[in-house]
Image 1 (cartoon, rainbow, N blue to C red):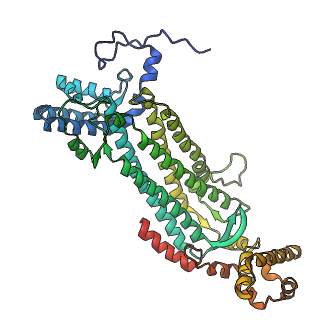
Image 2 (image 1 turned 90 degrees about the vertical axis):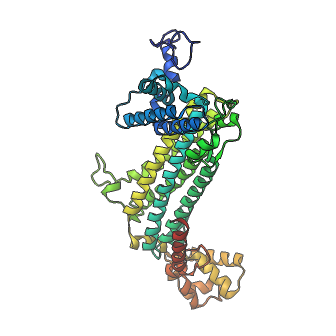
Image 3 (image 1 turned 180 degrees about the horizontal axis):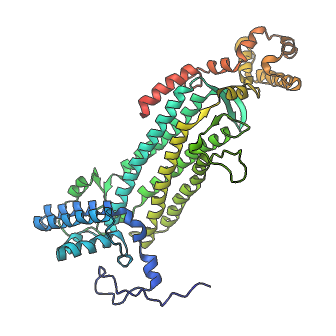
Amino acid sequence: MAKNTKTKKSGTTSNPMWGGQFSTGPAEIMARINASIEFDSKLYAHDIAGSIAHAKMLAASNILTVKESILIIKGLENIKKEIEAGKFVFKESLEDIHMNIEARLAELIGDVAGKLHTARSRNDQVALDFRMFVRDAANAIDELLQVLQAALIKRAEEHYKTILPGFTHLQTAQPVTLGHHLLAYVEMFGRDRSRITDLLARLDECPLGAAALAGTSFPIKRELTAELLGFSRLTANSLDSVSDRDFALEFLSCAAISAIHLSRLAEEFIIWSSSPFSFIAFSDLFTSGSSIMPQKRNPDAAELVRGKAGRITGALNSLLMTMKGLPLAYNKDMQEDKEPVFDASLQWQLVLSATIGMVEDFTANIERMKALATEGYSTATDLADWLVRVLKIPFRQAHHITAKLVKVATDKKCLLSELSLVDMKEIEPKISKEVYEVLSVEQSVASRVSFGGTAPAKVKEAIKAAKKKYL
Protein backbone atom coordinates (compact mmCIF):
# COMPACT_ATOMS: atom_id res chain seq x y z
CA MET A 1 0.00 0.00 0.00
CA ALA A 2 1.27 3.48 -0.84
CA LYS A 3 2.50 5.55 2.05
CA ASN A 4 0.17 8.37 3.12
CA THR A 5 2.08 11.60 2.51
CA LYS A 6 -0.83 14.02 2.71
CA THR A 7 0.20 15.73 5.93
CA LYS A 8 3.93 15.17 5.78
CA LYS A 9 5.91 18.40 5.63
CA SER A 10 9.10 18.96 3.68
CA GLY A 11 11.02 20.25 6.67
CA THR A 12 11.72 23.57 4.95
CA THR A 13 10.18 26.98 5.35
CA SER A 14 8.25 28.49 2.49
CA ASN A 15 10.15 29.37 -0.63
CA PRO A 16 11.60 32.87 -0.04
CA MET A 17 10.86 33.80 -3.64
CA TRP A 18 7.11 33.40 -3.14
CA GLY A 19 6.57 36.35 -0.82
CA GLY A 20 4.90 36.60 2.56
CA GLN A 21 1.63 34.83 1.93
CA PHE A 22 3.12 31.39 2.65
CA SER A 23 4.17 30.82 6.27
CA THR A 24 5.05 27.14 6.23
CA GLY A 25 6.79 24.81 3.88
CA PRO A 26 4.96 22.50 1.48
CA ALA A 27 4.21 18.85 2.20
CA GLU A 28 7.13 16.64 1.28
CA ILE A 29 5.25 15.13 -1.65
CA MET A 30 4.28 18.62 -2.82
CA ALA A 31 7.91 19.70 -2.76
CA ARG A 32 8.89 16.62 -4.75
CA ILE A 33 6.19 16.89 -7.42
CA ASN A 34 6.59 20.66 -7.71
CA ALA A 35 10.37 20.77 -8.13
CA SER A 36 11.82 20.65 -11.63
CA ILE A 37 15.47 21.46 -10.93
CA GLU A 38 16.48 17.82 -11.44
CA PHE A 39 15.85 18.19 -15.16
CA ASP A 40 15.50 21.88 -15.97
CA SER A 41 19.04 22.57 -14.75
CA LYS A 42 19.88 21.75 -18.39
CA LEU A 43 18.55 25.21 -19.22
CA TYR A 44 21.15 27.05 -17.15
CA ALA A 45 23.05 28.52 -20.11
CA HIS A 46 19.84 29.68 -21.79
CA ASP A 47 18.48 31.07 -18.55
CA ILE A 48 21.64 33.07 -17.90
CA ALA A 49 21.80 34.33 -21.49
CA GLY A 50 18.17 35.47 -21.23
CA SER A 51 18.81 37.19 -17.90
CA ILE A 52 21.88 38.99 -19.22
CA ALA A 53 19.89 40.27 -22.19
CA HIS A 54 17.07 41.30 -19.85
CA ALA A 55 19.49 43.19 -17.60
CA LYS A 56 20.95 45.04 -20.59
CA MET A 57 17.46 45.93 -21.79
CA LEU A 58 16.42 47.17 -18.33
CA ALA A 59 19.42 49.47 -18.28
CA ALA A 60 18.72 50.71 -21.81
CA SER A 61 15.16 51.42 -20.71
CA ASN A 62 16.37 53.34 -17.61
CA ILE A 63 14.69 50.82 -15.32
CA LEU A 64 18.09 49.76 -13.94
CA THR A 65 21.17 51.92 -13.70
CA VAL A 66 24.11 50.96 -15.86
CA LYS A 67 26.05 50.15 -12.66
CA GLU A 68 23.31 47.80 -11.46
CA SER A 69 23.11 46.11 -14.84
CA ILE A 70 26.88 45.55 -14.95
CA LEU A 71 26.88 44.13 -11.43
CA ILE A 72 24.06 41.74 -12.29
CA ILE A 73 25.70 40.62 -15.52
CA LYS A 74 29.04 39.94 -13.82
CA GLY A 75 27.23 37.96 -11.14
CA LEU A 76 25.42 35.89 -13.77
CA GLU A 77 28.66 35.22 -15.62
CA ASN A 78 30.24 34.00 -12.39
CA ILE A 79 27.29 31.69 -11.76
CA LYS A 80 27.71 30.20 -15.23
CA LYS A 81 31.35 29.51 -14.47
CA GLU A 82 30.40 27.87 -11.18
CA ILE A 83 27.89 25.60 -12.89
CA GLU A 84 30.29 24.59 -15.64
CA ALA A 85 33.01 23.92 -13.07
CA GLY A 86 30.64 21.69 -11.10
CA LYS A 87 30.78 23.96 -8.04
CA PHE A 88 27.17 25.17 -8.10
CA VAL A 89 24.80 23.58 -5.57
CA PHE A 90 21.32 23.12 -6.99
CA LYS A 91 18.63 23.22 -4.30
CA GLU A 92 15.35 21.37 -4.72
CA SER A 93 13.74 23.76 -2.23
CA LEU A 94 14.16 26.52 -4.81
CA GLU A 95 12.16 24.46 -7.31
CA ASP A 96 13.70 25.33 -10.64
CA ILE A 97 16.70 26.68 -12.52
CA HIS A 98 15.36 30.23 -12.49
CA MET A 99 15.05 30.51 -8.70
CA ASN A 100 18.30 28.67 -8.10
CA ILE A 101 20.20 31.18 -10.22
CA GLU A 102 18.38 34.17 -8.77
CA ALA A 103 19.04 33.01 -5.20
CA ARG A 104 22.73 32.49 -5.92
CA LEU A 105 22.89 35.90 -7.59
CA ALA A 106 21.54 37.45 -4.38
CA GLU A 107 24.26 35.68 -2.40
CA LEU A 108 26.90 37.10 -4.71
CA ILE A 109 25.75 40.70 -5.23
CA GLY A 110 23.12 41.38 -2.56
CA ASP A 111 19.75 43.05 -2.86
CA VAL A 112 20.35 44.46 -6.32
CA ALA A 113 19.84 40.88 -7.59
CA GLY A 114 16.15 41.29 -6.80
CA LYS A 115 15.88 44.00 -9.44
CA LEU A 116 16.66 41.54 -12.24
CA HIS A 117 13.14 40.13 -12.16
CA THR A 118 11.60 43.53 -12.83
CA ALA A 119 9.19 43.42 -15.81
CA ARG A 120 9.31 39.67 -16.25
CA SER A 121 7.84 36.48 -14.81
CA ARG A 122 9.00 32.92 -14.57
CA ASN A 123 6.33 32.29 -17.19
CA ASP A 124 7.94 34.30 -19.98
CA GLN A 125 11.38 33.41 -18.63
CA VAL A 126 10.85 29.67 -19.04
CA ALA A 127 9.11 30.17 -22.38
CA LEU A 128 12.25 31.95 -23.56
CA ASP A 129 14.71 29.42 -22.10
CA PHE A 130 12.86 26.47 -23.55
CA ARG A 131 12.51 28.11 -26.95
CA MET A 132 16.25 28.79 -27.03
CA PHE A 133 17.01 25.19 -26.03
CA VAL A 134 14.84 23.85 -28.85
CA ARG A 135 16.47 26.26 -31.30
CA ASP A 136 19.95 25.04 -30.35
CA ALA A 137 18.92 21.38 -30.39
CA ALA A 138 17.25 21.72 -33.79
CA ASN A 139 20.33 23.34 -35.29
CA ALA A 140 22.60 20.63 -33.85
CA ILE A 141 20.35 17.90 -35.24
CA ASP A 142 20.19 19.56 -38.65
CA GLU A 143 23.98 19.39 -38.77
CA LEU A 144 23.91 15.68 -37.91
CA LEU A 145 21.29 15.02 -40.57
CA GLN A 146 23.53 16.71 -43.11
CA VAL A 147 26.48 14.55 -42.04
CA LEU A 148 24.29 11.48 -42.47
CA GLN A 149 23.25 12.62 -45.94
CA ALA A 150 26.90 13.13 -46.85
CA ALA A 151 27.75 9.62 -45.67
CA LEU A 152 24.89 8.12 -47.69
CA ILE A 153 25.87 10.08 -50.79
CA LYS A 154 29.46 8.91 -50.48
CA ARG A 155 28.38 5.27 -50.27
CA ALA A 156 25.96 5.83 -53.17
CA GLU A 157 28.89 7.03 -55.26
CA GLU A 158 30.75 3.82 -54.47
CA HIS A 159 27.76 1.69 -55.45
CA TYR A 160 26.01 3.67 -58.17
CA LYS A 161 25.95 0.56 -60.42
CA THR A 162 25.89 -2.20 -57.78
CA ILE A 163 22.76 -4.27 -58.44
CA LEU A 164 20.48 -5.61 -55.73
CA PRO A 165 16.86 -6.72 -55.71
CA GLY A 166 14.27 -4.07 -55.11
CA PHE A 167 11.33 -5.20 -53.03
CA THR A 168 7.67 -4.48 -52.57
CA HIS A 169 5.93 -6.36 -49.75
CA LEU A 170 9.47 -7.65 -49.05
CA GLN A 171 9.07 -9.76 -52.19
CA THR A 172 11.45 -9.48 -55.12
CA ALA A 173 10.06 -6.83 -57.46
CA GLN A 174 12.60 -5.30 -59.85
CA PRO A 175 16.38 -4.92 -59.78
CA VAL A 176 17.71 -1.56 -58.62
CA THR A 177 21.10 -0.19 -57.74
CA LEU A 178 22.39 0.12 -54.20
CA GLY A 179 23.32 3.72 -54.89
CA HIS A 180 19.75 4.47 -55.90
CA HIS A 181 18.46 2.76 -52.77
CA LEU A 182 20.72 4.77 -50.48
CA LEU A 183 19.75 8.01 -52.19
CA ALA A 184 16.12 7.33 -51.25
CA TYR A 185 17.14 7.89 -47.63
CA VAL A 186 19.01 11.05 -48.59
CA GLU A 187 15.65 12.39 -49.74
CA MET A 188 13.90 11.24 -46.56
CA PHE A 189 16.44 12.97 -44.36
CA GLY A 190 16.25 16.01 -46.63
CA ARG A 191 12.56 16.26 -45.76
CA ASP A 192 13.48 15.95 -42.09
CA ARG A 193 15.80 18.91 -42.52
CA SER A 194 13.14 20.93 -44.32
CA ARG A 195 10.78 20.35 -41.40
CA ILE A 196 13.47 21.61 -39.04
CA THR A 197 13.87 24.69 -41.22
CA ASP A 198 10.14 25.32 -40.99
CA LEU A 199 10.22 24.78 -37.22
CA LEU A 200 13.07 27.25 -36.79
CA ALA A 201 11.24 29.86 -38.86
CA ARG A 202 8.10 29.64 -36.71
CA LEU A 203 10.09 29.41 -33.48
CA ASP A 204 11.96 32.64 -34.27
CA GLU A 205 9.92 34.84 -31.90
CA CYS A 206 11.04 36.19 -28.54
CA PRO A 207 8.43 35.84 -25.74
CA LEU A 208 10.33 37.78 -23.08
CA GLY A 209 8.33 40.80 -21.98
CA ALA A 210 5.02 38.98 -21.89
CA ALA A 211 5.57 38.70 -18.13
CA ALA A 212 3.09 36.44 -16.32
CA LEU A 213 0.33 36.66 -18.94
CA ALA A 214 -0.72 40.27 -19.50
CA GLY A 215 2.49 42.09 -20.40
CA THR A 216 4.05 44.72 -18.15
CA SER A 217 3.52 48.36 -17.26
CA PHE A 218 7.26 49.06 -17.34
CA PRO A 219 8.55 50.89 -20.44
CA ILE A 220 10.62 47.93 -21.69
CA LYS A 221 12.27 47.55 -25.11
CA ARG A 222 11.25 44.07 -26.24
CA GLU A 223 12.86 44.55 -29.63
CA LEU A 224 16.24 45.03 -27.97
CA THR A 225 15.92 41.84 -25.95
CA ALA A 226 14.93 39.90 -29.06
CA GLU A 227 17.90 41.28 -30.98
CA LEU A 228 20.34 40.45 -28.19
CA LEU A 229 19.06 36.87 -28.09
CA GLY A 230 19.09 36.32 -31.85
CA PHE A 231 15.35 36.43 -32.54
CA SER A 232 14.07 38.22 -35.62
CA ARG A 233 10.67 39.18 -34.21
CA LEU A 234 8.49 39.30 -31.09
CA THR A 235 5.60 37.14 -30.01
CA ALA A 236 2.47 39.15 -30.66
CA ASN A 237 0.18 38.20 -27.77
CA SER A 238 1.22 38.00 -24.13
CA LEU A 239 -1.25 35.22 -23.29
CA ASP A 240 -0.06 33.09 -26.17
CA SER A 241 3.57 33.93 -25.42
CA VAL A 242 3.61 32.16 -22.08
CA SER A 243 1.26 29.29 -22.94
CA ASP A 244 2.51 28.34 -26.40
CA ARG A 245 4.45 25.10 -26.69
CA ASP A 246 3.87 24.54 -30.38
CA PHE A 247 7.59 24.85 -30.97
CA ALA A 248 8.21 21.93 -28.61
CA LEU A 249 5.45 19.88 -30.22
CA GLU A 250 6.83 20.63 -33.67
CA PHE A 251 10.30 19.65 -32.54
CA LEU A 252 8.97 16.34 -31.24
CA SER A 253 6.95 15.84 -34.41
CA CYS A 254 10.10 16.37 -36.47
CA ALA A 255 11.93 13.98 -34.17
CA ALA A 256 9.24 11.31 -34.45
CA ILE A 257 9.11 11.39 -38.26
CA SER A 258 12.90 11.37 -38.49
CA ALA A 259 13.10 8.51 -35.99
CA ILE A 260 10.75 6.52 -38.22
CA HIS A 261 13.04 7.15 -41.20
CA LEU A 262 16.04 6.08 -39.18
CA SER A 263 14.17 3.00 -38.00
CA ARG A 264 13.33 2.03 -41.58
CA LEU A 265 16.97 2.26 -42.61
CA ALA A 266 17.98 0.31 -39.50
CA GLU A 267 15.43 -2.39 -40.36
CA GLU A 268 16.93 -2.74 -43.83
CA PHE A 269 20.41 -3.00 -42.33
CA ILE A 270 19.12 -5.72 -40.00
CA ILE A 271 17.55 -7.68 -42.87
CA TRP A 272 20.47 -7.16 -45.24
CA SER A 273 23.01 -8.30 -42.67
CA SER A 274 21.04 -11.44 -41.73
CA SER A 275 22.43 -14.80 -42.89
CA PRO A 276 19.68 -15.54 -45.44
CA PHE A 277 20.35 -12.21 -47.18
CA SER A 278 24.05 -11.53 -46.48
CA PHE A 279 23.94 -8.35 -48.56
CA ILE A 280 26.09 -6.40 -46.11
CA ALA A 281 28.29 -6.98 -43.08
CA PHE A 282 29.19 -4.73 -40.19
CA SER A 283 32.51 -4.73 -38.39
CA ASP A 284 33.04 -5.26 -34.68
CA LEU A 285 32.40 -1.55 -34.19
CA PHE A 286 28.63 -1.88 -34.66
CA THR A 287 27.87 -5.48 -33.75
CA SER A 288 27.93 -7.64 -30.65
CA GLY A 289 28.22 -11.33 -29.91
CA SER A 290 26.13 -13.86 -28.03
CA SER A 291 26.69 -15.10 -24.50
CA ILE A 292 25.96 -18.67 -25.59
CA MET A 293 26.29 -18.89 -29.40
CA PRO A 294 29.88 -18.14 -30.43
CA GLN A 295 29.06 -17.82 -34.13
CA LYS A 296 26.67 -14.89 -33.68
CA ARG A 297 27.30 -11.35 -34.89
CA ASN A 298 24.26 -9.33 -33.89
CA PRO A 299 23.36 -5.95 -35.48
CA ASP A 300 22.69 -4.40 -32.08
CA ALA A 301 23.37 -0.82 -33.15
CA ALA A 302 20.72 -1.05 -35.87
CA GLU A 303 18.29 -2.76 -33.51
CA LEU A 304 18.71 -0.01 -30.93
CA VAL A 305 18.13 2.67 -33.56
CA ARG A 306 14.95 0.83 -34.49
CA GLY A 307 13.96 0.44 -30.84
CA LYS A 308 14.50 4.07 -29.89
CA ALA A 309 11.96 5.16 -32.50
CA GLY A 310 9.27 4.07 -30.04
CA ARG A 311 10.80 6.14 -27.28
CA ILE A 312 11.02 9.25 -29.44
CA THR A 313 7.50 8.97 -30.84
CA GLY A 314 6.29 8.36 -27.28
CA ALA A 315 7.74 11.71 -26.28
CA LEU A 316 5.56 13.43 -28.87
CA ASN A 317 2.43 11.69 -27.62
CA SER A 318 3.33 12.58 -24.02
CA LEU A 319 3.46 16.31 -24.69
CA LEU A 320 0.40 16.24 -26.94
CA MET A 321 -1.60 14.75 -24.10
CA THR A 322 -0.18 17.26 -21.62
CA MET A 323 -1.21 20.23 -23.74
CA LYS A 324 -4.55 19.02 -25.09
CA GLY A 325 -6.87 20.44 -22.39
CA LEU A 326 -5.03 23.43 -20.97
CA PRO A 327 -6.83 26.78 -20.76
CA LEU A 328 -4.87 29.99 -21.20
CA ALA A 329 -2.42 31.00 -19.93
CA TYR A 330 0.36 29.17 -18.05
CA ASN A 331 -0.51 26.01 -16.10
CA LYS A 332 1.81 23.91 -13.95
CA ASP A 333 1.10 20.93 -16.20
CA MET A 334 3.49 22.60 -18.64
CA GLN A 335 6.37 21.70 -16.35
CA GLU A 336 5.97 18.29 -18.01
CA ASP A 337 7.04 19.74 -21.36
CA LYS A 338 10.77 19.57 -20.82
CA GLU A 339 11.62 15.97 -20.00
CA PRO A 340 10.17 14.51 -23.23
CA VAL A 341 11.93 17.18 -25.29
CA PHE A 342 15.23 16.77 -23.47
CA ASP A 343 15.13 13.01 -23.82
CA ALA A 344 13.97 12.98 -27.44
CA SER A 345 16.69 15.48 -28.35
CA LEU A 346 19.36 13.31 -26.74
CA GLN A 347 18.05 10.08 -28.27
CA TRP A 348 17.61 11.64 -31.72
CA GLN A 349 21.22 12.81 -31.74
CA LEU A 350 22.35 9.42 -30.46
CA VAL A 351 20.60 7.39 -33.16
CA LEU A 352 21.75 9.81 -35.85
CA SER A 353 25.36 9.37 -34.76
CA ALA A 354 24.98 5.59 -34.65
CA THR A 355 23.41 5.54 -38.11
CA ILE A 356 26.19 7.68 -39.54
CA GLY A 357 28.67 5.18 -38.13
CA MET A 358 26.84 2.20 -39.63
CA VAL A 359 26.56 3.83 -43.07
CA GLU A 360 30.29 4.48 -43.07
CA ASP A 361 31.09 1.01 -41.70
CA PHE A 362 29.15 -1.55 -43.74
CA THR A 363 30.76 -3.59 -46.50
CA ALA A 364 28.60 -4.71 -49.43
CA ASN A 365 28.54 -8.27 -50.76
CA ILE A 366 28.14 -7.26 -54.39
CA GLU A 367 28.04 -10.81 -55.75
CA ARG A 368 25.35 -11.90 -53.32
CA MET A 369 23.20 -8.85 -54.08
CA LYS A 370 23.36 -9.50 -57.80
CA ALA A 371 22.65 -13.20 -57.38
CA LEU A 372 19.44 -12.52 -55.46
CA ALA A 373 18.47 -9.75 -57.87
CA THR A 374 18.60 -12.32 -60.65
CA GLU A 375 16.22 -14.62 -58.80
CA GLY A 376 12.50 -14.09 -58.26
CA TYR A 377 11.77 -13.19 -61.91
CA SER A 378 12.74 -9.60 -61.25
CA THR A 379 12.87 -8.79 -64.97
CA ALA A 380 9.27 -9.87 -65.61
CA THR A 381 8.18 -6.24 -65.96
CA ASP A 382 10.94 -5.71 -68.54
CA LEU A 383 9.50 -8.60 -70.52
CA ALA A 384 6.00 -7.13 -70.35
CA ASP A 385 7.34 -3.73 -71.41
CA TRP A 386 9.14 -5.34 -74.35
CA LEU A 387 5.89 -6.95 -75.50
CA VAL A 388 4.22 -3.53 -75.40
CA ARG A 389 7.07 -1.61 -76.99
CA VAL A 390 8.08 -4.07 -79.74
CA LEU A 391 5.00 -6.16 -80.43
CA LYS A 392 2.52 -3.33 -79.74
CA ILE A 393 0.50 -5.53 -77.41
CA PRO A 394 -1.68 -3.65 -74.88
CA PHE A 395 0.00 -3.65 -71.49
CA ARG A 396 -2.77 -5.52 -69.66
CA GLN A 397 -2.55 -8.32 -72.24
CA ALA A 398 1.26 -8.22 -72.05
CA HIS A 399 0.96 -8.57 -68.29
CA HIS A 400 -1.07 -11.78 -68.69
CA ILE A 401 1.36 -13.21 -71.26
CA THR A 402 4.29 -12.49 -68.97
CA ALA A 403 2.52 -14.11 -66.01
CA LYS A 404 2.07 -17.27 -68.08
CA LEU A 405 5.75 -17.26 -69.00
CA VAL A 406 6.68 -16.86 -65.33
CA LYS A 407 4.51 -19.91 -64.60
CA VAL A 408 6.36 -21.91 -67.26
CA ALA A 409 9.72 -20.84 -65.81
CA THR A 410 8.54 -21.71 -62.31
CA ASP A 411 7.50 -25.19 -63.45
CA LYS A 412 10.82 -25.68 -65.19
CA LYS A 413 12.69 -24.22 -62.20
CA CYS A 414 14.65 -21.80 -64.34
CA LEU A 415 15.01 -18.07 -64.90
CA LEU A 416 13.03 -16.22 -67.55
CA SER A 417 16.26 -15.70 -69.47
CA GLU A 418 16.78 -19.47 -69.43
CA LEU A 419 13.50 -20.26 -71.15
CA SER A 420 13.94 -21.39 -74.73
CA LEU A 421 12.49 -19.37 -77.57
CA VAL A 422 10.27 -22.36 -78.32
CA ASP A 423 8.86 -22.20 -74.79
CA MET A 424 8.15 -18.52 -75.19
CA LYS A 425 6.51 -18.86 -78.62
CA GLU A 426 4.13 -21.44 -77.23
CA ILE A 427 2.69 -18.65 -75.10
CA GLU A 428 3.08 -15.78 -77.62
CA PRO A 429 4.10 -16.73 -81.18
CA LYS A 430 5.26 -13.18 -82.06
CA ILE A 431 8.12 -13.24 -79.52
CA SER A 432 11.55 -13.11 -81.19
CA LYS A 433 15.08 -13.79 -79.95
CA GLU A 434 15.55 -10.05 -79.33
CA VAL A 435 13.55 -10.49 -76.15
CA TYR A 436 16.63 -11.91 -74.40
CA GLU A 437 18.24 -8.46 -74.63
CA VAL A 438 15.95 -7.17 -71.87
CA LEU A 439 16.00 -10.13 -69.50
CA SER A 440 19.30 -9.53 -67.73
CA VAL A 441 19.35 -7.53 -64.51
CA GLU A 442 22.07 -5.29 -65.93
CA GLN A 443 19.92 -4.35 -68.91
CA SER A 444 16.86 -3.94 -66.71
CA VAL A 445 18.62 -1.48 -64.44
CA ALA A 446 20.25 0.39 -67.32
CA SER A 447 16.89 0.87 -69.03
CA ARG A 448 15.31 2.78 -66.12
CA VAL A 449 16.31 6.18 -67.44
CA SER A 450 13.25 8.20 -66.43
CA PHE A 451 13.93 11.09 -64.07
CA GLY A 452 14.48 9.67 -60.60
CA GLY A 453 15.07 6.18 -61.98
CA THR A 454 17.64 3.59 -60.97
CA ALA A 455 19.80 3.53 -64.12
CA PRO A 456 23.44 4.05 -63.14
CA ALA A 457 23.64 7.09 -65.39
CA LYS A 458 20.64 8.59 -63.61
CA VAL A 459 22.06 7.69 -60.20
CA LYS A 460 25.22 9.61 -61.04
CA GLU A 461 23.11 12.61 -62.00
CA ALA A 462 21.12 12.27 -58.78
CA ILE A 463 24.29 12.15 -56.69
CA LYS A 464 25.48 15.38 -58.28
CA ALA A 465 22.11 17.03 -57.66
CA ALA A 466 21.98 15.79 -54.04
CA LYS A 467 25.41 17.23 -53.31
CA LYS A 468 24.31 20.59 -54.67
CA LYS A 469 21.01 20.53 -52.80
CA TYR A 470 22.04 19.20 -49.40
CA LEU A 471 25.79 19.53 -48.84
